[in-house]
Image (cartoon, rainbow, N blue to C red; front, side, top):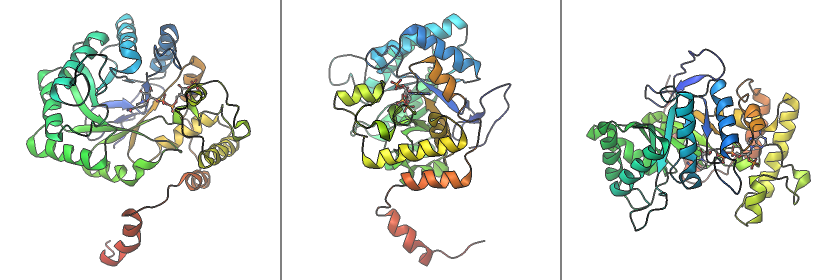
Length: 351
Ligand SMILES: NC(=O)c1ccc[n+]([C@@H]2O[C@H](COP(=O)([O-])OP(=O)(O)OC[C@H]3O[C@@H](n4cnc5c(N)ncnc54)[C@H](OP(=O)(O)O)[C@@H]3O)[C@@H](O)[C@H]2O)c1
């Protein structure tokens, strides 16, 4: 989407999807804030926020479920203390709930959505959210109900813009088409996992976003830290301390495959040639991908955010981009492979 690089210092801004909302191309993910097992405490979270704001960042991403609501509370206190509410674009999400009981305490139905929003506003200490996401498709709630509910929230003044996260292509396309035809507030963004390791969204979403006017907000650009530079193929089996290590010990990290180690090795090589930290190169790669309007930075330490905030300060040359693309390319599957080979036979050359 169109760049709006009118900014005093630091990070560039962009319009989010086809909306008029100006967001910095690097967003701040706050899933680590208040998270005891692999996150950081409030003091560190505020220091990370300080660095982010000083760099010109304006998009803070949270969710009701992050650290049981503590992430939202920390952001609410920070923004109030610093008088930053109007300057920042605060995004939150609903689906997972924040501890309520009964079958409507989670999910995407109207009852869950409305209750979740009230909880988020209370914890954030604000009367509106700038951006509200459905966090994850629950597999059952009709898109009609979700889009009508989100539209009601915009009309009530409690939400400014709406978006979906972690949905399939067909569901996003149906939701946006309903919004267009029924006059509901359209989606301005889709939040999806995107990194050199996780490229699955490329099958559907860049084209979908072009067609439907949504921007991609990419989460986990470092694959939870695996691409951060502290894990190298030579250290296989003896990982450095970090979330990957913690989650791996609990048997829940399934990304330590030969393919992924080959990607880490190539990233290390390319970063060496560029004289840049691996984390910056991994984030830069995501930011330059088609359809990506903003990339979410996650951090547990101030030094990490100081490093990753510089991820857009350089361009990866085409020949090195090609090497990264090649090592991380996904197999072409049906129908995409078939379309690639057969479409030229049914499509004339158009000038
Ligand atoms: N919509 C969704 O379903 C969804 C899902 C997940 C995340 N998100 C959003 O995306 C944000 C980012 O996700 P993520 O935290 O998984 O992102 P990530 O970029 O893949 O991983 C971030 C982690 O990498 C490590 N790290 C970051 N910078 C580093 C550096 N310079 N050097 C060394 N290590 C570094 C830190 O972990 P350690 O220090 O522990 O190694 C940090 O917590 C979240 O905060 C959240 O807002 C959304």
